[in-house]
Length: 208
Length: 208
Image (cartoon, rainbow over all chains, first blue to last red; front, top):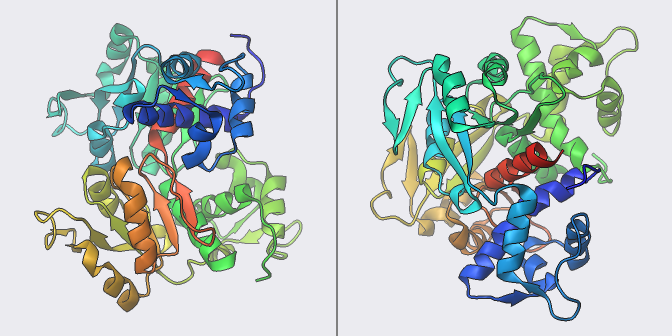
């Protein structure tokens, strides 16, 4: 694929389209219109077509999209046409819940390893996923060709943990710790900030 | 406050500023510059000043911001100057983890009730939070003046659950279920979509 500018919002919608198509497939749909794909997403059909247009021409005017083909196309565009292995760092309550979370596997993303610095946790397992020490990270990442990690440590540990992950071979981080990470520009970081989402919701409720 | 247009991104940054100020306060800071406030957030100082300007004039040019005052101001702007009570619906792994999550309370948001339709869970407690049946929701919300709820049910249950919450008195929903909700326009909904965040991160890793 050509390396050109694609809006952040478009990138974030791609997995949303994919998941919705997987649901439509489960419902037995073979061919769908852009209206059917976007209906339950509160997204305009024209927005969907515009988002897809960054990656080529898909679907047939007046006919619609072949569900299986579009699923394969989106998986390929996103980069999850093959299973992507991911680690979790920080096996507290949230980390444990994520390891058990079923929502990643339908999207071909799988948590395959967990890391913590608590001696009482290291060596134990959560649903077949072994909890390893931080020292074991570089070897595990190399052996399993893993570049993506999820941070679930407390906010005041996140920066150090992130730096250790980068040194160990991680290139992309999903950060659940409620703090920003200061890393080199060639690292990719997304944030899931639950308290901020709840706070902004309360702002809207009170003010809008 | 006047009801006027405030960009979504500004709204989402307000709790981020607040949390960072709470951290700066913990570090003993009394007066901070916009640069200090935004430094660890990867946000430009000018963006912070612009975001604040929607709500009035704060801080003194060349002097900076009084930390305690700005915390109070932001809490008031967001609407969390008094404790906001919140419910969780769906006490599976993620719901349980959220009930135990400590990140909400520092922002004056507190989960005070949980709901599930599993007879084996109803009546039990997670950290002092009682799990109630869905039928008990309207009365509980009314009695405790609660308008904000978090959805942690599977995606195929989320729409029905959301409709029940709205009927019971909820006005704002933070939805962790990986699906969009179709609700009346006067409802406020924010989404935390973990698989989509992870997917978009993988896209960036593979393509950018």
